[in-house]
Image (tube, rainbow, N blue to C red; front, side, top):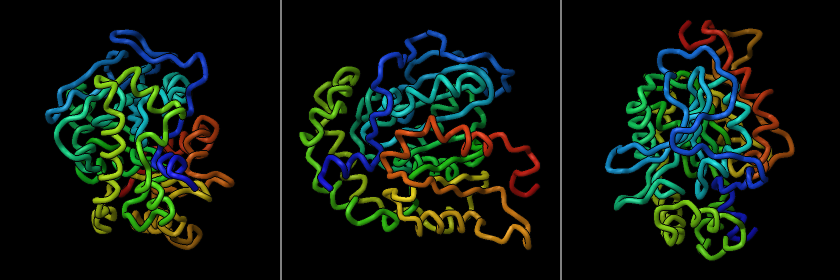
Length: 311
């Protein structure tokens, strides 16, 4: 496995380079059929930036309905991560997608990347949009941000979907960690990633800096304490591929910390769910989200309130 493959395992997945994927422009309406919105989801569809924690954070809003926030992986932005999924989701949901510090349309600032800070930035953005509570879906880096969001801002999260992500460094295969550390910014030239970044980034020459930010994030991350994970209140769906970058043992540990891992025929079940997608690597999980989302994630998000924790 070379460095290009290794960094892809952080979430740099090009799943929407095909023609016909539209990105909302300032003030434009997103795709999808209107649904009955809740009070917290009356956000005007379109795109823009919000000043949060010293950052000019880019976001897009598509459709109307109950809010669903999408958190991308490393080294990609909204259109590369969610371009094929958003039109489908926006038929029944209000989809809010963000771009984290230094990624695509959100400029970098003078502070290191951290999962906790990115969670705080996301919560601040939702607050500015007037979204009191939302379902959260995060893939790879975005999945760990989602965990931090549920821990640090529990009132903002109704249901949580963590895809191909862990809560501690030891949950990632060592070969993945090694490949990320060896990665050079130029290794991805020709993949479409730096080229796409340069087309929309405020600093078209910032690609090398972003790669180094991600490497430093992975190098210095100490993980989320298990007791904090165990305290997550939002019902959570954990999803991995059977050949993911995250080990199955770690994903099971995450599920057990949330209260899962009981015999449903003999004990009260918990509102958390666990899914292993067969035959899928980390990259393949991201590339195929539009295929498995309706069968794996949508039923979880649509579960009745009686399955909420403590009810």
